[in-house]
Length: 254
Image (cartoon, rainbow, N blue to C red; front, side, top):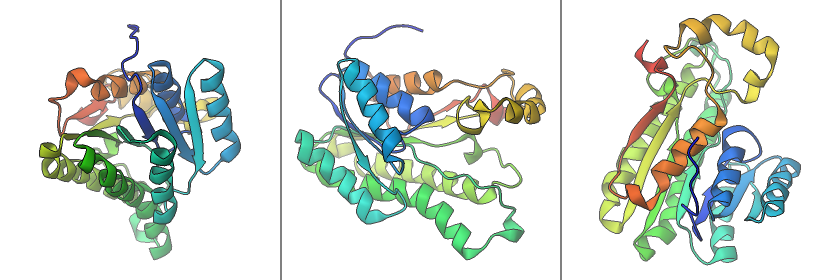
């Protein structure tokens, strides 16, 4: 992997869902690149571990315990970032809830939970970030979406609904706020070695899907997503707006 230096120097970055997986790796990588990281999530103990990891490496970070499905807590997260560091340069929407539910079995409560956690959190974090980004006439928003935006998988249909809507949220923000100096883009990961896939039994269960359902027959890594995010958030890509990049080994092609 190529090495970079200070790509995000002094940038204030809010990342949702930093207690594990892709979110945590983005937090540590961005801090290595000079960012002041504001992480969030429900599990405060893991969030504080992330902060200590960054600080022990010489970086700067805070953690704000946040239930992303609660719009008031999301507002507090954005406000706390600006209160602490004086501005907001980058928002990375990353949290997700992916239950296994067939559409015929879906309840209203389950629907609301999935939509509020996925689409609702991305939308309200974006709305609150724009309150600061528009007046300063600069900012970048990156939505961590999913290959399921395109590839429908039985049992995760309601998750796919939310991810398809996040794709359009990216488009709306990119169009409405381009002249405000704001760029909005998305990354669509495929199957990544994090979460459930860290369990060898789960990897064995999904072996056929991994090997035969992905042209590059393996799981992706959190590093591959984090470095892609770093690339898309760099000032050198300021002309990138409504960019949508699949980092899925070509899975969306099948």
